[in-house]
Length: 142
Image (cartoon, rainbow, N blue to C red; front, side, top):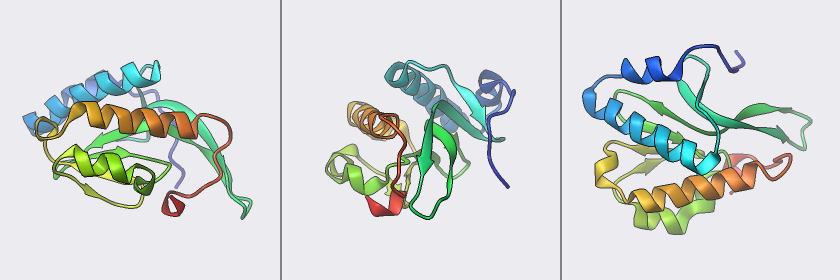
């Protein structure tokens, strides 16, 4: 299944998020990403709030598009997508505060417990990297 942009209203989606702390964090991330990207939020698939778009092309020939900055408020934690990979942000992640990571995902249980200025810089750097042309690196390669 390919994820793509939908016509769903991101504001309505965020207002329906539970629990309340996750909804609060979703509002904060919406504002942060809108400020960093200069883009309005759009729904990417059924549960990802995305900002802008980037194109990727891998040496294998696989290519496509995805949200250049995005988050998904999940019940256990909020997922912040870093398409250039978490490895590209290791130094900043050391200063962020409580979080866990996957290859291209940052998981935060409570945005009030992390340094939002550091998070904003991570999002800004990731955005700049993936929107500077066609991105050709998998997150695991960072």
